Image (tube, rainbow, N blue to C red; front, side):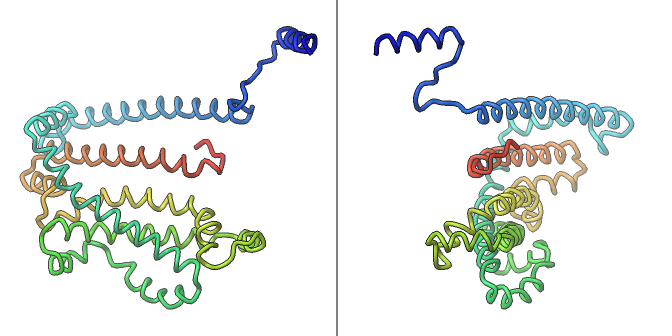
Length: 289
């Protein structure tokens, strides 16, 4: 046995084969996938930086042809941003908006996904609720501001209600379409493997199969909810949107742009975090995007 071991080691050294420790083996497919991910990340970073630079340069050139109350320069907006941040007003506005953005997004997303899954899976419930859905879907969240004030008052709960309505419909249709699009063959395979009953089929077959569409709806809804922050604060609730509206009334365009950029930054942070979570949840698909 000593001769065999020495011979094997010699062959390994001669051929240059790499011995991978047990439990840490890397397949060629995983190595290639990591290389593709690194190239995609590097390319996106380069393109994204170039796009931002081109946008700022274009903004600067156009601002030279306009008065400051129409379009201030990037430097002027940066100065305003620093002033708002140093005075504490920026953090206060962010905190106020978050107080209704978080509950509105969570409640609207949860209800939308749950209702969409049930309606997409059960034909009877779908037929019963379809007329109501078609009746209420075209109603914009802004049209419900009167109900928000009457039911909740001019406070964070009323603003959260407006945000929740916007999140609900996006997630409802995403979940509905995802569940409805699950192949009948896949459901039959699940039944043949002993997965029976609506609850078990939904939990082990249908929802996992529809998860890409559901997660895409959640991600889209998160962005929509940041847009609705401005609309939800239009009736007097304090926050970023209210600050934008007051500044626009006073022709403080630099303040308006500064807070718009804050909204964009907040969305970017949340979207990046959710995108990373989405990749982990969908790792079974073997995608590199």
